[in-house]
Length: 115
Length: 109
Image (cartoon, rainbow over the protein chains, first blue to last red):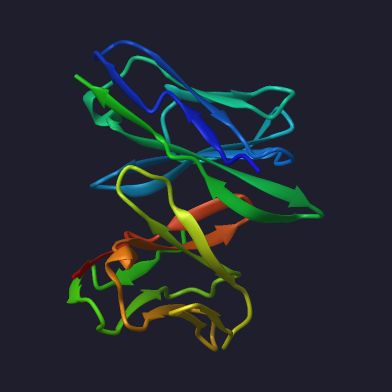
């Protein structure tokens, strides 16, 4: 089956701009989570969406937002970009049933560079 | 917040050697996952451990979960260059994964 697809793979933006990243989960997975990976902070949880609702949120400023569509595809938006937002942004999809998550699968990520 | 400490941070070995990497916390894990990440790619799930004392094997990789569920280890036998990557442990809390900083393993041919 197809894996988690993230687009674009690479992106270069200027400080102050905004950016939208996309994630298509594995078919049947309704939970999509987003993570930021940087050399200094490692992998950090941004937020999780399930059935078009944000169910969990990490400790990031409000400039980071997301949404999920009825087909489970998710987008993440970062507004007013800062140099420190340069990172690999990863999404992970998982299967949720009766309170348990399984089948965590990450996409290849979007490498965002802010100049 | 449950913090995960991984050691060593970096490990460089020759092909054929054995190695062990560790993941520790002062708190009890509900469950723990191990991932391997290659440059420019997302982490790939290797195993999930849930029960204290559990041992799982995946070919040359052996994963152990401490009896008290506060620590875990990953042992690789006869390492190969293809094992090179960043090994991450992660505590699972619902959908949220909290990662350790990882062990960067390099296996030289």
